[in-house]
Length: 220
Image (cartoon, rainbow, N blue to C red):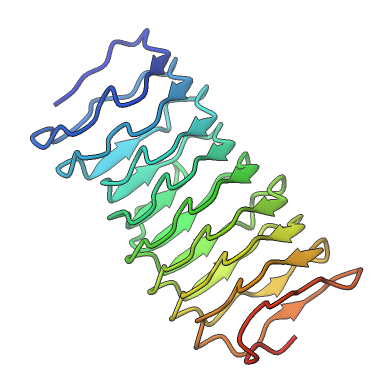
């Protein structure tokens, strides 16, 4: 088990990486404000990381949590870095006060940015709920691409841009609810390969730009 001093404010790039025998991490320090790239990558025996005490932590960086199956998110989280959870064993990422629910990602209201491929190719995810993220206006390319078990998605209420391939090859996706009125653009091939999704409802105030959005299956 790894126990960090309560005074730690930053874990630099790769500081906790490729530790195959590390099984657990004690209570993370409340002072922790920065988690660098690649931390906890290559630590396959760590199954749960609880960031709920880390009220200063605003960013999870690139490829930093790729082996964890369960993440309890910090209430202050604003940015999820590129490929942070990509191709991960992730089963759950939720708020601190919620019970563990396998397959569910539910992001806190503080999140304002999802980088490219943040959750791409996570084979165990079945539900993604971004409905609390009022400040999340852009979802970068391939955010959830290749999550082949993903069935249900709820989008942010102020979303303006779904970038290229956001949900490409989510073969089980069948329910995305109603897209928000704020939506302005849907990127190329956003829903390509979503064979079970036969209709998408958009409540938009302005015409929505949808270049090469999908195969011709999606009713708009």
